[in-house]
Image (tube, rainbow, N blue to C red; front, top):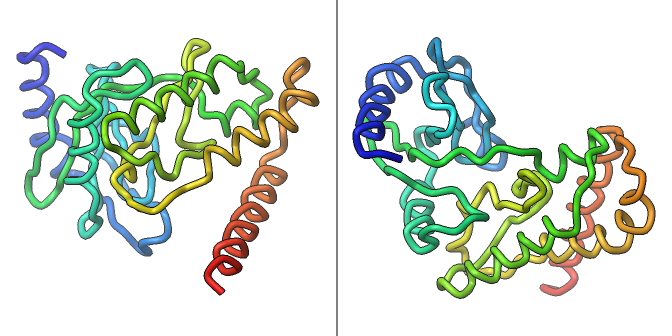
Length: 225
């Protein structure tokens, strides 16, 4: 991103997005809520820490705004600094604060998450899984610990795999989510869905997600007892 364009987007964010934004945290375990966003800005998604917005004049860039009281801005900035430039990750152009809002300006990653691919019956190529594997290994080589990597945090973009959310890559504890997803991909998706992908109802996906969370929780309790 050119410096002049970046400075214009920073000024627009301070002038247009942040003053008219209503974003808040209800429960630390749930996604943040966005009540309203100013005209010309579109909410692309809301995670456990922040909302992600795009302006119509900057289609290749997003602004990630942290909800007041939510931590993570400093650690995410540090993760992007350590990652540098890599094709499977976004790039952080700027990290700033204005009127109590902490925000990041990032390169926009376009595509469909693995979760969306399953719901819509869109093929998930093996090459995308391999790309993500390589990206996570690269992150480890940079002193990071890939964490919370699941179907809603990774994406297929033009047939390649990209990692959308790196906000928890500084956590110390181990996380098996990606290994579990790969195991399901190899044992279920490849033999039964890869040749003729069909849409998987969202209620089925939600049931799988809840069952997976229960099994992971039970496993953690079993190891700690």
